[in-house]
Image (tube, rainbow, N blue to C red):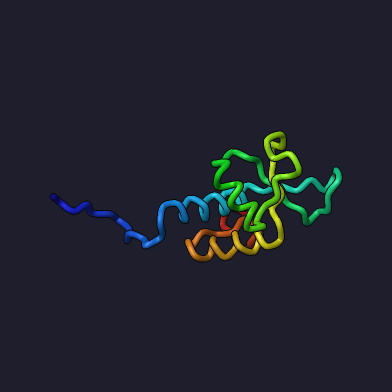
Length: 106
């Protein structure tokens, strides 16, 4: 059997772990604040559009909160621990943070 060739090195990260980490990074990169409503300017939310199993795992790890009725809410709250974890993951995967002042798209 011929071995496949990849343009990038194969990671030793298991697919399930990769999906969880990538979901956390996507939640972080697509976050928004509702400072004009009920929350503090530094409270961040993201729309749900990811695997519910992964969202449940991130909630159990206290990276996000889905609210008291997760099946009814359309967004999740990203906790301070979740924000920090996502920033660490961005560094791990060499992805620029939108919030950096020197970001090329700002």
